Image 1: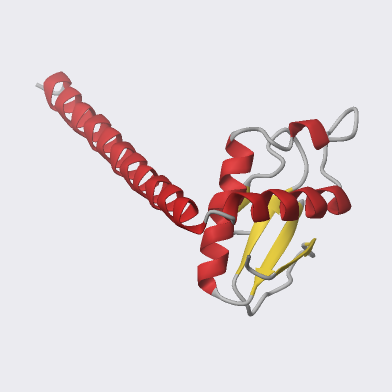
Image 2: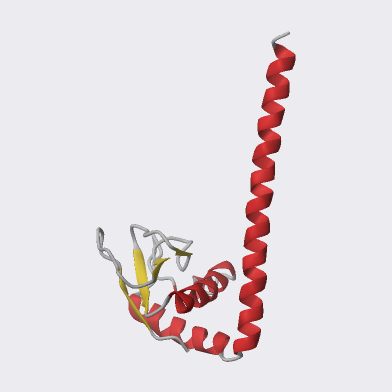
Length: 140
């Protein structure tokens, strides 16, 4: 199990070690990202490999709406640091227990992410070509 520190991100703070940010306000709470959110927690690691592994654990938890039962607040729901830290540590250690299985899942998620990016690039190219054809056709 990788060692990491979870704390509240302070605006304009630079981190020298590998890190990732977790959104802590709104219905997308728990969403991981490499760039800072305004309202986020930061998870700081000792090495890049641990950061990459935990990113996909956090991504899985966010996509499956794992954090929704832990949200508090009536107008803008948010995650509390203490609850997030406790539950994240438990779930991350459980998910990473079967290390080989975890690595297979991470590889599959990376491949899907890459395919999704290629798909979006293709959609953008199709839209650009459509615009060119329509522009040529309408300017005759």
